[in-house]
Image (cartoon, rainbow, N blue to C red; front, side, top):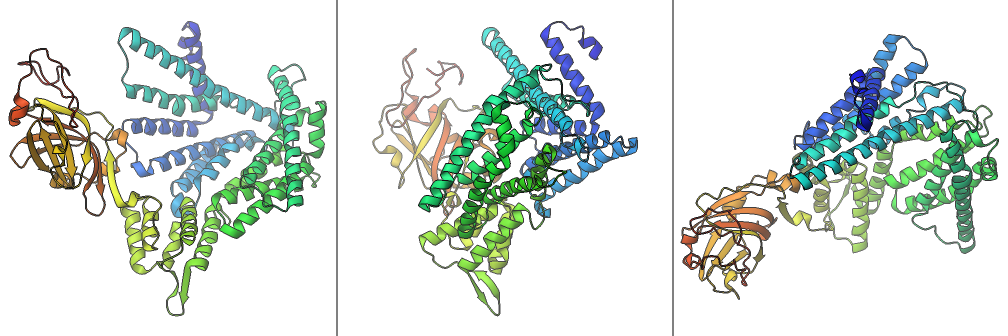
Amino acid sequence: MIGRLKRVPGRFGRFTQSLAEGAGSAAIRFPVATLLVVAIAIVSNLAVRNVYLPNEPDFVWLLAALYGAAASSVVAAIFAETRRLPVSVRVVSPIAAALIVGLVIWFGPDLGVTAPPLILAATLAVPLAPYIGRHDACRFWVFSLGTIVGVALAFLSVLLFVLGLSAILEMIRFLLDVGLPNDAYEHIYVTAFALIGPLFSLGRIPRDFDEAMPVPGDDRLIAGVRILVDWVAAPLVLATAVVLHLYAAKILVTIEVPKNEIGWIVATFAFLLLSLRIASDPFIAGGAWPTRFLARIWAFVLLVPLALLFYAVSLRVAAEGVTLERYYLALAAVAAVIVIVLEAVPRARGDIRWMAAVPIVLLALSSFGPWGAASTVGRSQTSLIVTEFGWSGAAVGAGISAADRPANAQVRLRSRLYALEEAGELDRILPFLDPGAAARYAEAKRGSPGTEINRVFAELGLAAPSQLSEFRSFTANAGTTVDLAGFDRAVLERAVAVIEGVGGASRGASTRPGDVALAISGSDLTIRIGTVEDHVDLAAAIAALPESVFATDPDRLAPPVLDLTSEAGRRIRLALRQLSLSGATNAILSGTLALYYRAADWPAEAVEAPAGAAAQTSLGGGGDRIEPEPRGVVGEGAR
């Protein structure tokens, strides 16, 4: 196959050959990861066709599990490869790693595992895996650079190729009136970034784990990295350090509370500084003065900003408890402190592998266990909620009442419940609800996943911050074909006025023949065409709509089509583009629809316009109508 591709002329052939070689290398070296990437591409392309495996709510979990399994299998394969383990171990270890990590992520909600940090840790561990226990930080640096650059170039190549292909296809569509359907473009993009990009990236991971640092000046890429480190990154980090130290001095002088965003500023600074220390490691001895100076003082430069970060986080935690954001800010500070402490250990001093490994290990540890992010947030927020808003009795234990609270207390309670929901720990509130409320919560969790927070709000007497719980609605943006058999007039895409009382369509409406006015009161649709008015009760038809209509994504929902009979016996057809209903009464709050009817059923509409006359727009709320030529068919054009 590759041999035939070599004979294909031009850049397309060379690019295709490179992709084939990368995919072939990935399949041979990382077969487990390759199969998982193919699975990701298949389920992603099925999702483009609105087919979700195993179901729509769990689709994202499936993708996360497949990706986490693929990343962990690569880590296991590279680790076994560098240790020259027996072939049986090299075959089994990637499979075992993929199964363990994939299943842990898939069952994460039930096991108390937070998937994102575990997936990130597995991804970042790829360049580190070959050098665990091997005493050569320089070769780790070269391998990491090759991996990062190879993956970046792989996805950049795929991106440029896909953009160029899309531009060519669009030019063909525009100039030659020949083109692919829209979903074909989606399949192209999904396949490019879910299949070709990952396989190409796997093929770009270096095979040589013992490649030494090239002689200075012999490698243009490394020479470019050196210039970037010496004269761009190092001076900017030093300047940022000066600003942070000045801000810390200002706090000491003014005794003011650190600003809200100081946590992320310091955490980002610590990440950049450690990244720069790793990137500059081969250049320190002969580097420019900013690099050499920063290499001497980087640990001391971190001390004051980290103290500032600990102070800011402790203030927020004491007042408002632990949230995921504060947990990971504190974790970043802990990682930086551990790296600094390791500088005092002779065997670890200056070893960039430790600087890379510590954050990765802490990320993985934060995904599970009582020390993990979810459990820590759950304990902290539940304790604050029960302490401030709970009650206790010797007979029944502790609980949380739905008593009236001041507005600021409601805001605090909602904020803490949101923090629990974000961490996936909202179930911790169940023991403090009365049995009936707990049962209703469990029913909401089973029947309408994602609405549990609204049920807790209702049970605790909280005013929800929005009106989402008071109405239900749908919007149908997908295209559809409406059968016009028996109808010869259409009013398209009309936003219908909702009025108090029946007969509102006639208020201020023109009585010109053919003008159409629509209005809704409750579930009654008033139709006025010219001087003739009629009513249609929509209650039964709307009640018969399946609940899936209200839960489907707008871009995948086609407008429901209703065939109805008015009070006077006239037949009409409605295509509902948007509808909002009151949760309490099921009354219509707003609606956008298309109306199809027969002109002969409305005497005022049957007045014929002169041949060739232009269509008129109603001044009484009417809109464009599809009117056929004499003896023509509906759909020949709007005139």
